[in-house]
Length: 305
Image 1: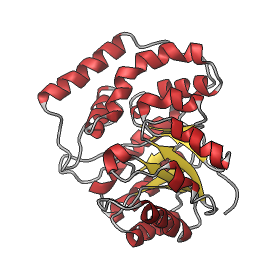
Image 2: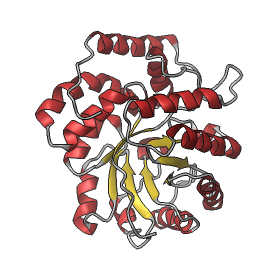
Image 3: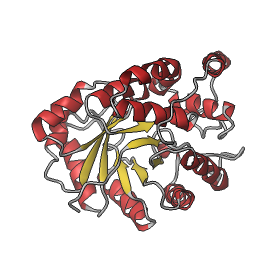
Image 4: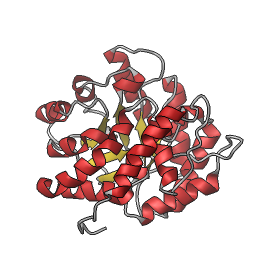
């Protein structure tokens, strides 16, 4: 694998839909994905943090990738999150999602274990070597504690199929640090919703987005305006969006995003334990943010959606 994939634009971190008994609802998830593709998103991330990866069995993860491949029907790339406790298990899951047709994986550091930098690098290196798919390195230190620093990423530049860096640290300087060292070796993706415009300004060409599950057209419009350097036109949309985008930076981001998705009639708010429904005070807060947003929902500029 030598050529970089042409990943760019908004890739929602798709929610996994559940039935009342907490079993995975593949039909409802198919409907959610079909709606996102219809509304113009550029790609899909299945079984990410928002997709409740760590609450799913391996069999469920594989089924969800199959559903996404069917719903997308080749129109957009389907990337599967891989988040496991050990490098060996991560390799096993990666091989399985490759077998069922994923277009790439979004790979987390090994979960739970607080690894040293050389161990973090070795994890990415070994999993990447076990598959023939492009790999997006996923860094989310606020949630997962292990920080994939620019130095660690740069040390992986010799791994041909490690092609993309998704950073959810919120520190946009890292994109510049990476590019200063290895040029355009890695495709750069924003991973935290409420710094997306800043991330694009310093070189991100994609956005793995939580809130675009509820507002895919707004997300893709914001992205395309910023990518085209039309920041003056993007700012009013970004300012409108920001209270919603902040929800992506909370520890209970999955519940918040799913509640917004339910309000928009795009999915249900149900999450699988240990994630529980938002307490009333939090639910009322999110509903209030949504009420304000919908009361002033902007007319979107034409960006070719």
